[in-house]
Amino acid sequence: MVFQYYPDGDMLYIKLASGVSVESEEVAPGIVFDFDEHNRVIGIEIEDASTFVDLSRLEVLTLPVANLILSERVPAGV
Image 1: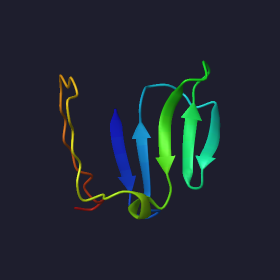
Image 2: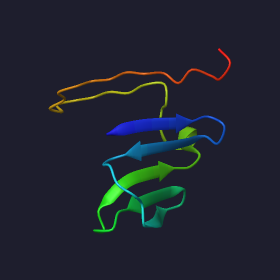
Image 3: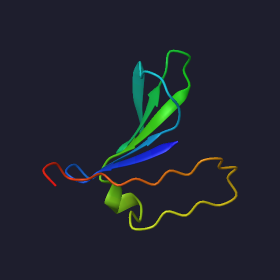
Image 4: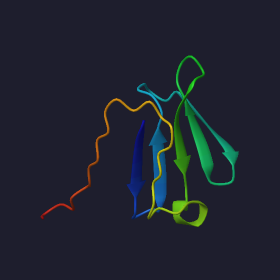
């Protein structure tokens, strides 16, 4: 699972699984699910994310995480 935040558009994308999105559905205002060819949800897009979630904090509880990778997007030209 990958969390990606795009500050320019205040959009949070949660990639749940690998695959190609073949269909998307807005399930609530500003919340879009991406589906693969087998109708499985592979991603969640949250528009105006800062109004829905506290982006300054991420808490992980009781997940069987084998590999935790923390990375930060470095702005171009730095």
